[in-house]
Every structure is written in structure tokens, then in C-alpha cells.
Image 1 (tube, rainbow, N blue to C red):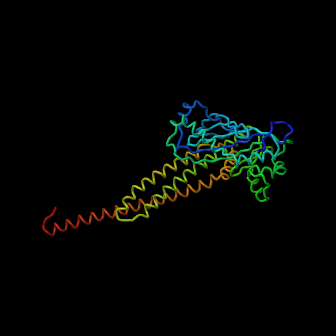
Image 2: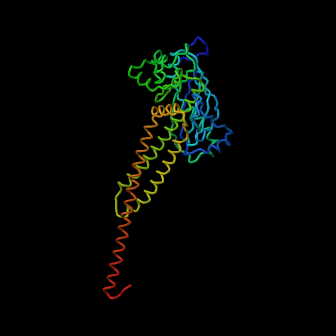
Image 3: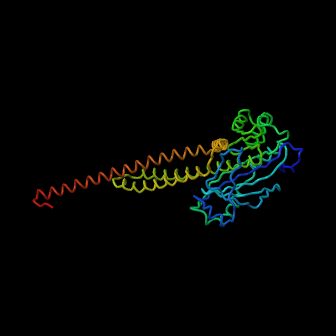
Length: 370
């Protein structure tokens, strides 16, 4: 039987909650105003601040949020859940389980949840059920969904209330195992790799971000802001993965058209292909800007740094670079195809002028002008 967490008591080493984040890219866009009417659900609150400053983190269009039915695992664990709808077509399902226990118990739990339980299947079932109601609010829904999953461990209290520095020094090995979802001790190099992706604002808070999990040692309000930023980073990853797939398919079609037998009139057909390519380019650039600007960091530099760290670890920046490279390639191809068309059109017009002149000369020499 898997090890289960015990009810909260002061005798245990640490307490907090474990969050499982599942996200699905279901459509090009979601009309949140219409969705609110369909679901009668509120929008998500703006993230709480780490410090009383004039700057803050602001959603351009805050996602709509609604609770879901609890998820009960085979082990008897009962997870609370909620679902968020982002205007750029991503649905985010979060399951949460409060815990108190030892480091060993937490390591066992995170490893089991990371590798043994198919949370995506549970979340997908919930999403499909909710979309039966929300479908009228979707713009250009997708037949196939890209998905991402992420594990977030929020430790609210640790016996002795250590500082972030003390926590890493004393429990660094355990934290690294939690972030990696591994029950075995990690090598010194792997431990260093995990722990170097850390960030703190106060001496008593700590966030360590990994590619598939994060460890947060913070107050509930501080952790809430970090969790929302991690959600946003993972949703951006989904969006850029979608754009990468879309551009790959479009570029493959263009390359296939170039490999076909080329003739004089083929270049005229390139005009239609160029127009379609340009339409896709404009659409992708508009949607990427939409996803990029979904959240704003106004003077809150810590939130901005936390987001950049999360984005780099989960792969947003890598996919963003890929998308921009393919956009550049597509723009070069578009210019090439337009140039080919213009050259062919110029040649055709020049040929037509020459033919007209020849005909006119023939009539002239025969004594018959036009």
C-alpha cells in the first residue's frame, strides 16, 4: 500500500499542500464574457503582492474560475479541484491536497503522484464534461489538444521555522528529491542543478523551480501568487508548442510545393501560397502577442524575476525562440515567393508588350496600321 499523509499535528516536521496542475489547449480563443454567463462563474482574483509596493501583477483579461467535484484516488486521498479558463484558449485544472508529515512522506507522495497516477486522464474527463456547457464560448475549437502537467509543493510550516538559507543547507537533498519526484538520493551535481534555480524575496521564503515541479516555502498569500505565475508560464508553454506545431505544418506544405515540378505558371500559383502563408504568419504573431501580454508586471520586479525563472525552467523561452525562428523563416519564404511571382508577372508583361510590338510592326510593314 502507498504511504499516505497523516492529519495535521504539531509533531510532524512540515505541513502545507500539494497541487497538481493539468492544462489543455482546447481552442484558439475563449470568449470569457460569454463564458461567465454560461457558467455563472467568477473571474480569478489578482495575485497577492509579496510586499506593499505600488507595483502589482495584473491580468489583462483575468481567467474565469469554477470549482470541480473532488477527485478521490484509489488510495482514498480526496483532492479538491478547480478549473480556470484563459481567454487564449487554455483550460487549467488544479487538484489540491493538504498535508502534514515528514520529509520522507512528502518525497514518497510527490514521487507517486509524479510518475504513477494518471492525473491527465482525470482532468481530461472533467474538461470534456465542462466544455459541453462552455462550447458556445470557444472560438475555433481544436480536435486534438496539447497538454502539460506540473506539480507544485507548497510548504507552509516547518518545525523550527528555518530561513531559506537554513532550509537549503539542512534539507537541500530532500527538496531536490521532491522537485525531481525521485525517492532515491540525487548526485551532488543533480542536487546543485535543482537548488540553483531558487529565488527568495524575504529571508523566510523560498521558491525552487524545476522543469516538471516546484517547491514553495511561503505564506499562503505568497504561495498563491507564485502558483498563479507558474500556471501562466505553463499555459504559455502550451501556446508556443501549438504555434510551433502550426508553423511546422505550414512550412512543410510550402517546402512540398517547391519540390513539385516547377514551370513558368507554377510561380503564379506561388502567389496563392504566399497569401496563405502570410495569413498564417499574421495570425500567429497576433496570437503570440495575445498570450505574451495576458499578464503584466507593473513595478513588481520580484514577480517578473520569478516568472522569468519559471518560464526558462519549464521551456517557454526555448519554444518561444523556435517559434520566432520559424516566423523568420516563413517571412523569408513569403518574400521569396512574392519575388518569384513578381518576376514572373514582369516577364509575362514584358513578353506581352514585345508580342504586341511585333504584331504592330508586322501590320506596319504590310501597310496596315492599327
